[in-house]
Image 1 (cartoon, rainbow, N blue to C red):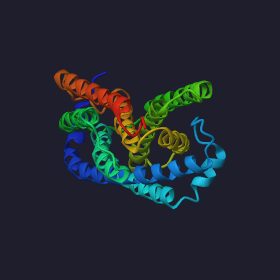
Image 2 (spheres, rainbow, N blue to C red):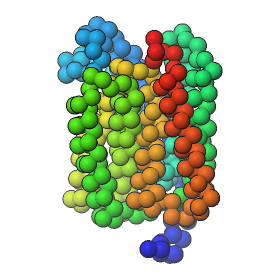
Image 3 (cartoon, helix red, strand yellow):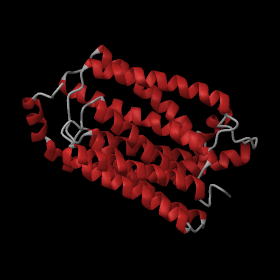
Length: 305
């Protein structure tokens, strides 16, 4: 069904606010990078001192011990700041514009981690990072030109909650089966998909609270958001256990936006004004970024140590 012209006109009048959301998302991306770096150091120390060598996901005992690691706590604090900036950016710009900007964290992480770990990224790893950043950058430009904010009705929110429920059940079953055989990539994909839903629900909750107040369905969305964030956080820590900070950030800053963008475009209708040529360019750019993550997982020197 075609969107109401009056509604779209009102949405376009708010489009200048995108200029506020983008820098907020950039600051959040820097804190995301630093937070992931410190968390990775904490997880590595816990794995070294208290791990059993299986690297099959963090145990309950290891998770408790993380709470006593200063580096992990500092990283968690920085991630909390990153979330605040991300939520603020979602209040000013469409989901499909600000969410992919997190790829900036990949560049910061690559530089910081290479210096701390005293490693040199070879050409294949550098090319993989360039593919991630380039693909997402092109997508953000296209989305910023055409994306619009739209009100979220109950039907759309129920669709999102149903998708999240089915996804969570699937991830739990798969992880239980392949836990001791899964690598960093599975944990990163699981975390990225979950955080894509977290970002989407955050956008929905912000929109509904600012336009219609708190209602029972919005409360359910908040509970689902917190549950997905907790499960996604566990997968992030498991990814830190199995891979480098560069790889973790690469997965999160590409997989997370792809999921959020797909939901924003097809469920929330944020891409309703995007012409087909722009859609094709956006899809191609996203595919390039995914290839970059795959190549980084395959060739990163620290992951293969």
